[in-house]
Picture 1 (cartoon, helix red, strand yellow):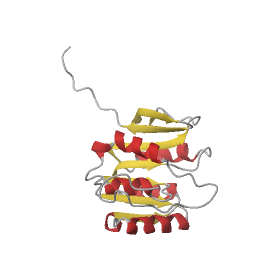
Picture 2 (cartoon, rainbow, N blue to C red):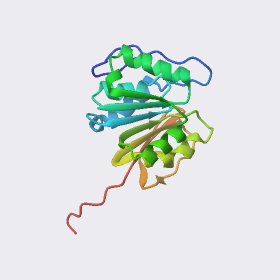
Picture 3 (cartoon, rainbow, N blue to C red):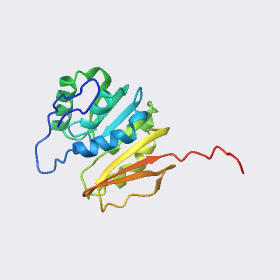
Length: 190
């Protein structure tokens, strides 16, 4: 697994070991960043269920101002830090070892700065994504984008707390769902 482009282009990233580990494939990662390529520069990203941190690292490499990596696993947090150091991106990153909902609740309660981008890739088929999705909306800017990776057969809501599905892509047995706040029609001619 490598960083695709940007300041850390080509840097090899360490991955986690284990049967529950399922890193986002390069094909899916490229597709995600193709869709959000104009939403990255100078923005703040939340990499929830970070694993190795590859999605947040890719965003930082492409010019994101800051990325927060959240994972409940101590091993994952250690791997994210190792990968950030290898890519010389530590100064723009915060790594948090925490359960996702606890982090989101604390973030929303504290009124911390909100995120422009959030990538959610929890363990599949456990209902975790559906459970945290509404909590994520409370830490997002209104112009933000929430990106969810899930199995093809996972049913995600069309709308959640003012955000609505804007795009959905399928890659084999995986789907990527993008949520944005729908923009009011600018008017135009009647």
